[in-house]
Image 1: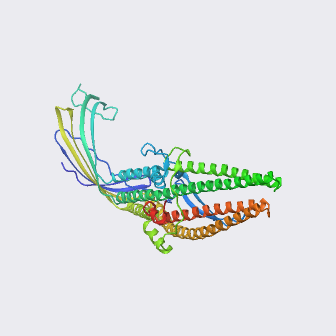
Image 2: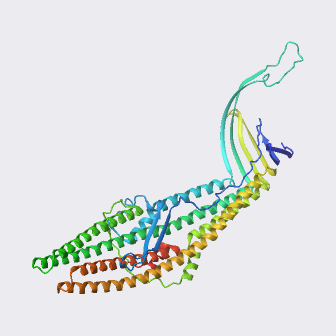
Length: 522
């Protein structure tokens, strides 16, 4: 049986209308049951205005200038600032047994595998993959099956059906039934042409790609966070070792002063001054030991280790000159390799696809629906039926919804493009700042080295003068403090230089692969 083409104007509401052309065909063997419905309009997906989120956490390295309040020559204060999920992790010791000794490379591997930021973004990638598949389903065939058993009794009089009989005394029954039938049916629906759905899927794939690139960028940040924390722990350990060496010197001076006091060569005030110096060094050791323990706990939290300081840091990162690459070359390499820049570009493409999907809401769409099944009072007494319907949907007027979607999508495109330009400028500024920090720290290291030599020589000469009795131990204490400050300056400068190289590795992208180029371990 063929049905003619049907033209109908079908209002969605009082303010929306579409023109639908429905062409259908149905075939019947025995009883016939057919049904069809107009194709639902596909609308453009909406994305957030900005592709950035404040909930993602951050990792930054800083070298702030500080005024000189002591005789210290150090004028920069390096630090790694870690916020959000980068400070945490999931347990790594089950999959990676821990020996109690943590190398720099092992710390990086544990961080890449178990840091909470990486774990969260890995889940986000899976989520966007699922979203892309869900959006793609609008373009692929949808196949469903159903089985129904119906028992029905109908009151014709209640439905307004009236029968008049020409035979006197005979009346038609007003209640029909009960009767029953079953229906076993398979249904297939397929979108043939829907530009809006196609662009929605293309946008979803770009969003999926952007999320995967953000995961790669997060791994670069994890390298910076974990590597910076490891360098901080190395610096804290070096400060503690320096303080212990200064305590040995203070104890030796105190013993010498006490011996001279017993023979009447010095006054009691010199003994007290030496003892104060010993106590000061002990307090300093207690403070520095506490700082080292906290740094190790922070490092353990980032790498999935138990949150305690009961492990040993095995590697040292000595001073080495910076990598032989110019700032301009590093900027170009960063533009090619930074995953966050590629992610921003993917977000622009995703927003452009959404804008195209919004514009396509004004275009016609074509869909195909069909079903086949058997219907009857029982399986033994059943007949096959089928229906096939092709629907052409032509939007006429939808109350300004398409215009509203286009305006929203256009705003998102403008914002994403602005963020892309800002991302390029931010990357270049990060690279050039890392170079400035590298040069400043290298200068500080050279000055600190010479300051240690001069301070050590001053301390030796002052002690000789004290032993000869031509000076009191005030000058010796001052020389000790100068040497302690010089040692701290050197430790801080080496830390700042290594942190600048680590920041440079992050700035050019692909930190895990590029790290050996910039940072030499021992």
